[in-house]
Length: 395
Image 1 (cartoon, rainbow, N blue to C red):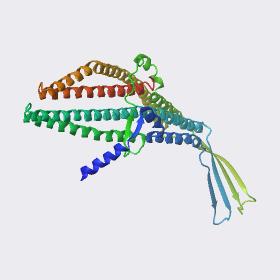
Image 2 (image 1 turned 180 degrees about the vertical axis):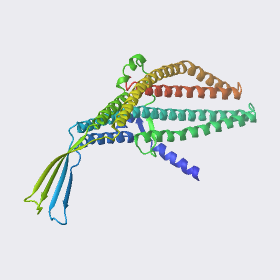
Image 3 (image 1 turned 180 degrees about the horizontal axis):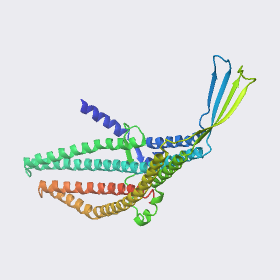
Image 4 (image 1 turned 45 degrees about the horizontal axis):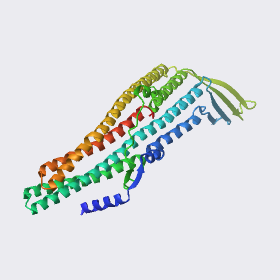
């Protein structure tokens, strides 16, 4: 019963498959959940700039006394004259630049991940189509074998062997067809789409275009969003160092006091004073040292990011070139020869020549080569996506 329900759901999903080209999938990144999260964080960071640099709150105290009825009002107005407000605003601006750079980083990562998920869907669909064709070939071979048995030209053992091979191929085709649903759900997850609506990778694998050399691509790594994020974090930590240094200065406040209706005084009295708050035990030196340590860590992270991007560019470039050459070799040289060999073996068997084992081996070899072509196309496309990510979107 459960198997029947799963099969019915799979059939409905296939009927409602939504064709999505690679360009359409990439264009939908702007509405992806990860993109919405980082843009919301950037908006919050932008609002933090307006909130930063606010003056400390003014305290107001109202008092009276029991024996001498009068009303006293004391107000302490802070005077942030040593640049703490500006330093605080600089930190907020630096944090906004980090959030802004992270939007570009997430979008570039999404472009890579969506591309690879779409390519995996295309690979899975191509694999399923190949498995279906292989299953039909094996079922046709089982029919031919049964016909030969009826004419006395094949043994019952060959019929059993051919039938088992056909059933195995059909089972593999069913598994590969089910895998499409999982690949579709992975792509839908990245884009924030309904995973129950099956997607179809429309348009086939991307073309195997030429790319620039990794020396030229490496020269653009400083503009990579991840490098921008690391640089922005370095600037943010530098702003925090400046803020920590400002905290060493005293905090001033203006004290205003007024006494009303005091019977011991000839009239209302007013007093003006200056309050000086000294950070004697505030551990300001330790705070500055910690801020400097974080700035040094951010600089180290920036250096590590540049090194990592260089390595990623070289590795992805080599993988792409190797995968592209693999596609051309197998597709142009190996596949035609193997397809001809399988057709000849099947034709000979149909005419009563050759053995069943030779046909099965030729069919399996052909299916392996056809699958190898599909996988090579997918690997090349994935390597190209990694290369575009590592080079900051350069092609």
